Length: 307
Image 1 (tube, rainbow, N blue to C red):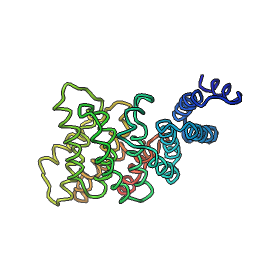
Image 2: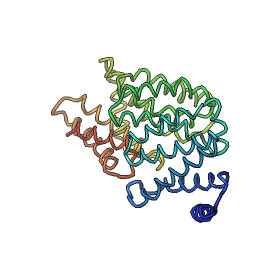
Image 3: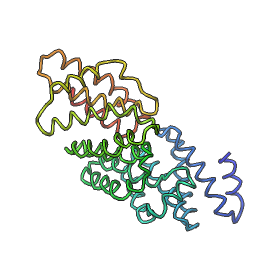
Image 4: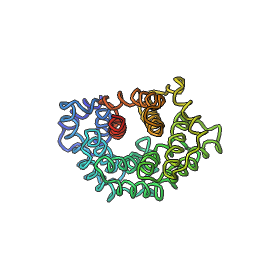
């Protein structure tokens, strides 16, 4: 196991960094999949991450240091310590050069975790109340990282730009969010069909949500479209998603239900039905310790707004 290998190498004087790095990377990665709320496990993980960063710095290879810093930032974000996560992002910014490093990191580690960290940090900024910085980071990702993606790889593109779409929706830029999603994901998917991606199940929920947001921003509502979305959200068949995207899709559907319910007159039975539907989607996400922090935060915000 990685733990056995690390124990052996750590006990040897003058252990080669080239041997330690893959062992530390594997051990830290395996530990990140454990319960982030377990304090004992957290205490074990932190020194390993510090060691990974230290060894990678000593090795002098940017791709290993970028992976170590991305992992350390992700760990602190899991713990809810977004300030520390963003401190590691600042360090990562001094090391990582997307055009130079992305293919090498992907070849060595399976995907570019450093680029993923830049994208995820958009949501970390939101969670500490820095929405302007979140938008700035999102625009940076669109300008500098999105052009490096294979336009046929819709799954990777969706993972990269989803935080930007979510934050633009949040700050009243639903039109921009809708354009980005349709241009780089939905249209790209259809243009390059039959390329498959498990993100397809998110297309309807996110498109419908962005349509509602756009209407709210314009102050002009398409009653026929709203009725179609309402019928769709109330159909139980549209509540089933893969485990990978279940919390995300239910958070989006809870927000759709909330926004539709809010648009109804007080006393309208449909208002109460839609709010109840929102609660059914959002309550479990807000209470589940394994929910992603941004999703849990969003779910709780909508539940509080419903009252």
